[in-house]
Amino acid sequence: MATSDREPGRRSTLRPDLVALTEWIAPGERVLDLGCGDGVLLRHLIDTKGVVGYGIENDPARIVACIERGINVIQSDLDEGLADLQDGHFDHVIMSQALQAMHNTQGILQEMLRVGHEAIVSFPNFAFWKHRKSILEGHMPVSESLPHQWFNTPNVRFFTVADFTTLCGLLDIEVREWRGFDDQGRPVQEDLNFLAALAIARIGRRA
View 1 (cartoon, rainbow, N blue to C red):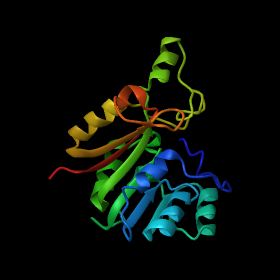
View 2: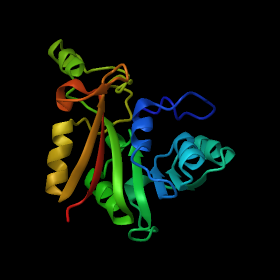
View 3: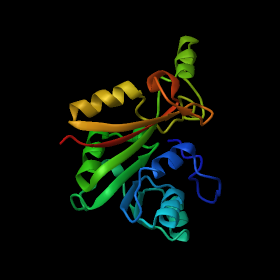
C-alpha cells in the first residue's frame, strides 16, 4: 500500500491525489476515510473545509498518530466490512491508495456506497506505460505508485483504470469523474489507462 505521505511522524505536504480529491469535498460534509493512515488528510479536511471527519485504520502506530492529530479514529479490519455504520450516514467515503490491498474488493466498494452518498477511490494504475515497459523487460514494475518489490508488497490486487471501470459496471456503480497523475505528480488529461501512474475516481450508485 502506498502511504508515503501518511506515515506516522511525517509532516510532508499532501500528495497530489489527496489535493485533487479535496476539491470534491464540500464544506461541512460528513467524511469517512478508510485506511486513514496517520490522519493527515482528515486533519487537512477538518482545517480547510470544516468537515466532520472519521477514520478507520488497523495499524496501532497510525491510530496513535491520528489521536495525536485530534482525529476520531476506529480500529478495524476493512476486509471485514462496515457493518457497524448506518446506511447513508456520510456524504463522502474515501479510500486513498488502499483498494489494491483489499481482499474483499467488491464488498468494500459496495459498503462504501452503502454508508456514503458518494465515494472517492485512488489507486496505482498497473497499465501505466512505464509499468508496461517493465513487464516487457521481464520484471514486475517498481515505481512511486508501486514502491515495493514483488516479494514484499502488501498489495494483493494489481489492476488498471480499465479494469476498475469494468468492475464498477458489473456492480452497477457509476464513475462520475476521473483524475489522473503521472509518476512525477503532474495531472494527466487524457488516456488515463496509459498515461496515469495514479488514478482517482469519484463514484456513486446509478440513479
